[in-house]
Length: 290
Image (cartoon, rainbow, N blue to C red; front, side, top):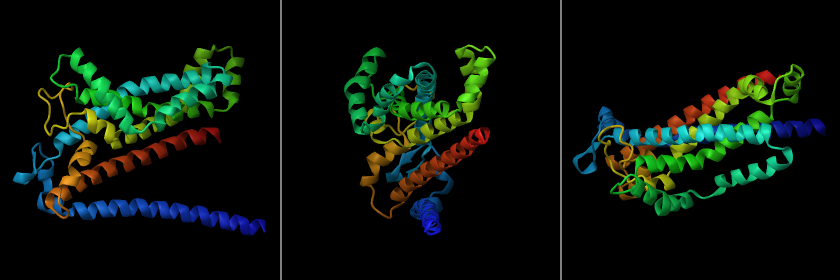
């Protein structure tokens, strides 16, 4: 009976894994098929600045730029905040308070993105407009700040787990050598958890790339590069905000529609690539525990 149960369990696990892999492959295939018209008709002209469907121009450079700028701003803010907060909750905060504090922080992950977007419109964009004397507070920088708050729970949770899962023998050995708590964290725990922390950052990167609604509401949605190029206090566009605003306005089967699907294919490929790197990175830490 036990052997039969094990066989059923293995069959269920293998089948689930296969189905998941097939679903990912089918998503990629469907996106590729639907973007093929743009790839064949427009080709390398997709990698240009101008986006004007009426003239047959489908350059996606401005959307790529906006995507990576907004994500960069979000990561620059959320990485140090998330990592130091995770170290505090895992290594400094008393264990009886850890669950409460961590639960409160993780509540941020459960807030719908539209709520963040509404807060961004009602407060953040208005505040930046007054602070920097702008015509509109809906800018790349505003979107980046808002996105940093949204991905913060991902970094905190995964980094906290990375530190908390380190066996206590490392801490006890370090204490036996006379190291202070700060030295244990810096010299022992951080090097061990480094691979998992990198994995957490990569997964947060993927989450940031795919965020749509909140970014769409506060970024301004202008299809051009800022002038000068590093003027992040100007409106812009990301791939997700472009898809969210414009995909419903396109006719199915048109080159315009195909170009939009190509942007989705590009974003999907980047996220899958980051996820694979994150999974491979986390295996380094697993080998340390063996």
